[in-house]
Amino acid sequence: MRSASPASRTRGSRRPLHNPAQHGASLNPALEEVSFCPRCGRDAQVDFPQRIHCPHCGYGAYYNPKPVSGAIPSDADGNLVLLRRAFDPGAGLWTFPGGFVDLGESVEDAARREVREELEIDVELGELVGVYSRSDERVVLIVFAATALGEPRTTEEATEVAAFPPDALPWDELAFWSTQAALRDVLRNP
Ligand SMILES: [Zn+2]
Image 1 (tube, helix red, strand yellow):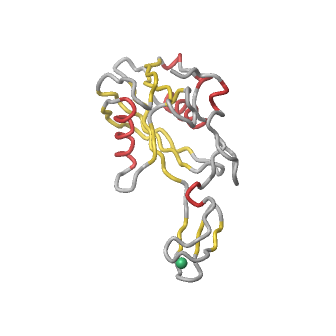
Image 2 (cartoon, rainbow, N blue to C red):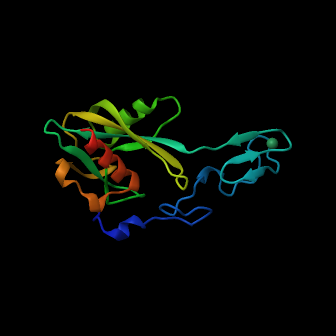
Image 3 (cartoon, helix red, strand yellow):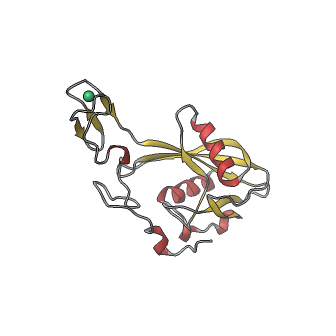
């Protein structure tokens, strides 16, 4: 298990290209160091991080913040189930399950799938807790309240799993600003 030291926040950060706002990550890794058109292979015009356009064949693509869906499961006693992240960003720190919404699934599908992958339980989704977005972030986080259906366990993505009473959340060891904001919001509307 990785320890939750402040140093673990910066571990694994990459080259600070373009916008090192969070975790040293780029606002658009998909467009980094791209200079050729993916359709015709000739020189394209790249307006990083938002757009690529090819004057030769007319190919164009716009990039937007990526939706990430998460759920905060509560157990039968009203405790909130959190996991200690195995991987960067935020390795060794606590958060709730969440991940990128794939093409072909809804935001709700993604939240349920992520909980299954990270905690090996199903959840019943409840109210929308909030939407968390900042101009220096490449993701938009959408968070639902949820009821845990089963006993969560550790997985490849979660080195430790614990159910925290609402008055004993690990505020000093949370992975992201949005983790903190969403937990505050879910406690406001339990
Ligand atoms: Zn082209």
